[in-house]
Amino acid sequence: MEIFKKIGTWTLRILGALLFILLMAYGIIYYKTKQRLNKVYQVNIPNQQIPTDSASLASGKHILDTRGCVDCHGPDLGGKVFLDDPALGFIAGPNLTGGKGGLGRSLTAHDWIRGIKHGVDKAGKTLLIMPSHEFFHLTNKDLTYLVGYLQTLPPVDRELPKSTLGPMLRILYQVGKFPNLAPAELIKDHNAPVSFAQQTGVSKEKGKYLAVNCQGCHGDNFKGRDLGIPGIKPSVDITATGNPGKWTEAEFMTTLRTGRTPEGKQLNQKDMPWNVTAQFTDEELKSVYAYLLSFQ
Ligand code: HEC
Ligand code: HEC
Image (cartoon, rainbow, N blue to C red; front, side, top):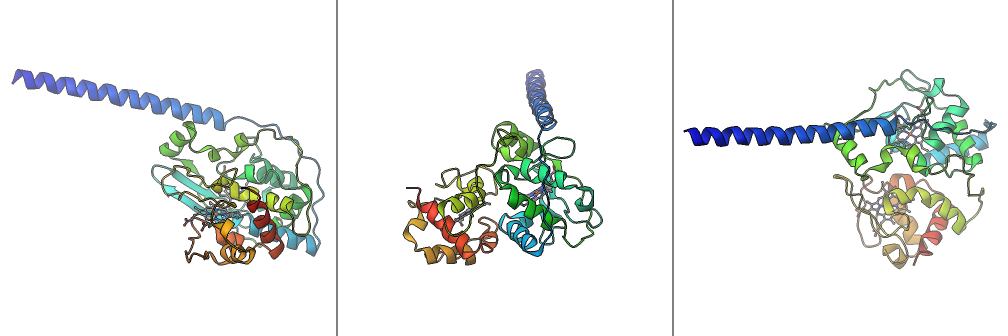
């Protein structure tokens, strides 16, 4: 039948045009992503003495344990694949040790600091997904403790393939849903001074320093946030107006150490990394509690 043939050809033409538009749109997204990720950052790194005494190394290990590094770089810091999905891509936290396949031996103190604090690699380009925008505020002292400890990691032989970005991740990044892809972009002024002083004891200021690492998930004002990314659970209000406002300091501490809330809910480490907060000292947890409750 002539008429059906005609409709058939038109349907094909329309589908072809749609496919062409989609491919063009993706081409633009691909190109723009490449352009943004290739930006070169100029960062000044002052010469720092890296301490190697045992007290400094212990402080360095504590910083490592309380900043979630193991979640992406593996419990032995020998590297870990934390995303392997055809649409999103393949992303691995690299092996940080001096073993086979590790970065450890090739990084100088300058390189360590540039990577951790600025999210920038040797070539001056942004690292992918490494949350340096949450480590930028680390005091110089804490940063040098951390690097000192990283330089003593027992070597682990583990070679991981290079990370590759899937189409969905590029799209989410371009529409502004996944800015964390390029941490160096999130640091407004790479050469701004650190606004925190080294703290001792229990204080809101210390709580503020530690709570920077909660903001990525709980939001800048800690009132909870939905990142809108499939597979990532929305977080909840952890200020005076949320459940922590009803808890005693002791209950707050137990929750962050065991993942079990006073309401009897067991938090999943994959959603809420209480394995990390469990490593906080009493002083640190009390400081975070005091700071969070100051948000009404
Ligand atoms: C959310 C996951 C995640 C967390 C948490 C994380 N990293 Fe990373 N890190 C990565 C990824 C992914 C890369 C590789 C980035 C790339 O290849 O572009 C990386 C790269 C690095 C590099 C390599 C820098 C370079 O120049 O190549 C260092 C050093 C590093 N991370 C240290 C740390 C330390 C120390 C911590 C904790 C304070 C930490 N990371 C926490 C995901 C993470
Ligand atoms: C990787 C994302 C992520 C990070 C980082 C994170 N949280 Fe959470 N947190 C969540 C999510 C998601 C929930 C809700 C889990 C649920 O409902 O099962 C949660 C729940 C909580 C709860 C329980 C609240 C309630 O009403 O039961 C507390 C308390 C909490 N977080 C405190 C913190 C603190 C303090 C930090 C920083 C030291 C932090 N979180 C860092 C994602 C995160």
